[in-house]
Amino acid sequence: MKRLFKCLGVVVLFALLSYGFYYLSRFEEDVGERTYHDKKTELFHQNPDVYAWLRVEGTKIDYPVAQHPTEDSYYLSHDLDRNETYYGAIFTELVNTKTFNDSVTIIYGHAMVDDSMFGSLDYFADRQFFKDHTLITIDTIDHHYEYDIVAAHPYVDDHLFQSFQLGTRSGLTHYLDTLKERVETNGGSYRFLPIEKDKDRFLILSTCDAVNNNQRYVVTARLRTITERTDT
Image 1 (cartoon, rainbow, N blue to C red):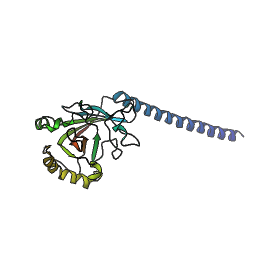
Image 2: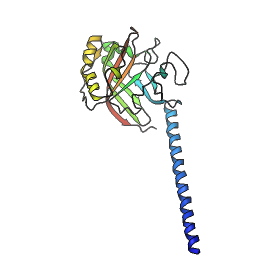
Image 3: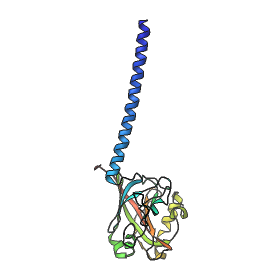
């Protein structure tokens, strides 16, 4: 009988320990998620769709980047507080992850006449401005990304990711192989940089053309460096 009670005691103790470890791990997960959310809110915005911050050297572009979980077009007509507005917000579509590990990431925003959102992106139409300004930076909670601008030019109002099949390396290679030609055809600027088409990652900023509403203005940049953030 004593042996039976002893065995039962061991079983109960084991069950209690398992129960405790389970809820401790759940608690740690919850704390970790809350800490991550708190950091993101502190750095970027309280809207959970926001996951990065974009800055473009020499322009007024200094904004959070969002991605709606179900509607690609949501931030064309809503700000980050989810209010309807023709200013919209700066955003990516669901074809891209939020890690900036894709071969190419496209960020969208309206070109507003007051130069807000992507309204100052066409500063790069000035060749001297293009020559003098080369840097785009993106910050996430964990990493800092620096990109070198390769090209800036007007282009037809196409969905670049679809028309060039940028989800594939072959599509990206074609995009890069024809980039200089598109720049020359459409009156843009191009910078010669060493590019490894099968390895490098790229960023495209795309907005409506302030001069011609039937066109877009596109800036293409190559990832230069990634560093871990130590200030979060």
